Length: 153
Image 1 (spheres, helix red, strand yellow):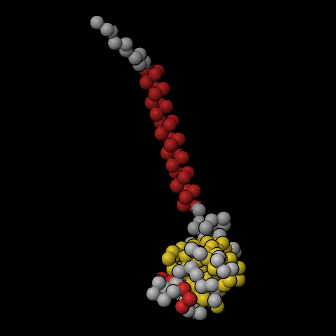
Image 2: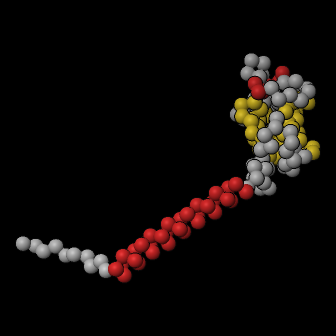
């Protein structure tokens, strides 16, 4: 018959195991609390973070060329919208291939624009949260009405 070895559990070992359990549990609790406090302290519009995103496609029934020349925040004009301030995003068509987009209540100083599909886009800052987007047809290298995406930081 085989004899089964017994682990020697002395009172000192039991106390050491209990101390280890509480030490590890306390560290995990402290780390969890620290992560939660950092997440709560971070602002939605913090410097260096993405402050807004808008994909402007125009009304699907009318096309982007029929976008109004006055600022509007009509949801049908956007495929995607995010403004860290929680306020509206407004867009307007200034002329062929030139659009202006405003992130209301957002003072982001810079934007990155890209065309969607066969289009390319560039951005110009007009003021805090206000940008001019120029869209070009890549194949023709001329101003064109086409969908674009703007990310502000």
